[in-house]
Length: 101
Image (cartoon, rainbow, N blue to C red; front, side, top):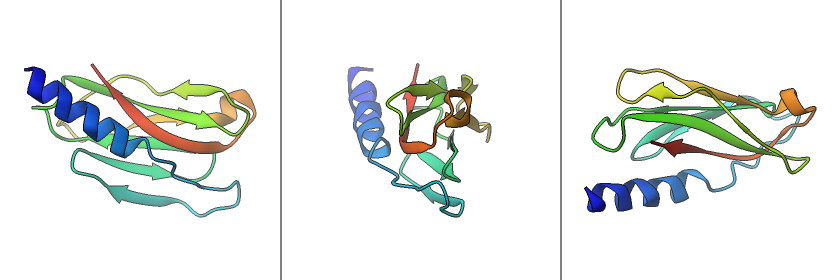
């Protein structure tokens, strides 16, 4: 189980790399080994498909104003998406990633 958590942590680090979207940037999506991500500059979303990594996940976004916002916890492996809204703190997305639990 410790090895699975270490792999999950490595995936989080990889997924937390700056997405670098501006306020006027078009929506974009990409897939990592564990999670798919999407952003339109105001919102950061993720869907994590491997239930062997964790039971639930949530999106998190660091906003341009320095605040971090979180999406709802969702089950892994069922195609659900979690969205973190920087507009809820009157900002745009600086970078994004996800949390596992």
